[in-house]
Image (cartoon, rainbow, N blue to C red; front, side):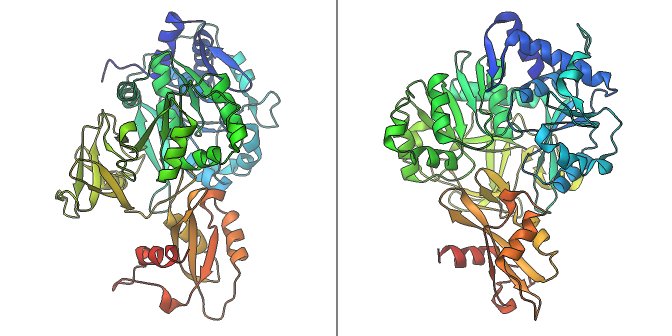
Length: 518
């Protein structure tokens, strides 16, 4: 791994090879590779000029924008670590992650300054280390362009080895507290190379990044196109606009994009006359991930994109890409997440004693990848749970058929995926359990036509208490990101809550009970 390049090295390479080529754009700005390379150096030097040192973590909270790729490349050049936060989090959720990561600075969009000002006292950052992506910085904030303007003209950096941490990516856990997955430069480069190999991307591609740039999906695919020297278009709209997406695909002659089923369902729901306005013939590859897709959805995608080859993948922030369902397998193996990805190494399905289960039986999925994460930040216990030697698990249960296809059957953690976002029931249960009227609660995922799944809370109140669904949903909205909040709350008696002999709630039984009645 010692000779692998970082993302910043890749940008510099293409700045030499194709300096004037369009590297990246959003709705506001465009950068050639030469411009991107120069601004990455400016940003890296400017952050070091604030007193940061290689290895320091910097929190980043922003909607999709071109500045994200400047930040990823600039911090890679300076040896700093990006801590990307989901912009949907509440102030206390952000404060926990920023504090746990012990960030040395924060970069944010102007929309989040007030939220971060509300928790600034918990972070105790030195003055001048709150940077805002705005022309006019509010009091107590340093403008991004003003920061860049103070950088030396030709900064010099130490070489950043590929085994150095490049990103600390927080994923929710069954404890209800997010865990920081440590990603290194070399691992992300290997994911990029494996993606290009498996999917046949080249420097002539144009990729549209729609998924949030704080997510592993956009980071991994974005890194692929950066290493290739291809063009990246960033969808920086605040909410998903299906017709605007088609317009971008047509006008930019986009050859690839990655979406979740919810996005595709919204695209397919557009009137036929709207869909017919746009020439989508350039789209050659499409990715669908994060949640199961119905057969009619997949057929509709194939009809809408006549030259598009549909792929479906399974992976995680920790393991990277693990399996791939290839275009010719989409309908024949509907419901499967495919077979091994080119760089996944191997897959094992193990029982509770860590013994391999035979084909057809359910076991916990472990993968051995060349680009596995380096563990959870300051959490050796969770790291030990996720790793069995060089094998990694994020707690998904699956079975393998006689052709080697993997079928996810449950999540060990009962995770819910709503509109492509991970929702962990235990985190929502912890918040509802703090309500003074709630005696017990279980949160399950139930099917939703638009979002794939949403959270449903099954609540037992203390004897004599009365509460409404609206009251408990409002309680959650004040403490959790919107996508985590239950879309429905039902009340039951204590005796109706299914439990094991040791008193643990049987989420599986609740899912069967409520899904069957929908």
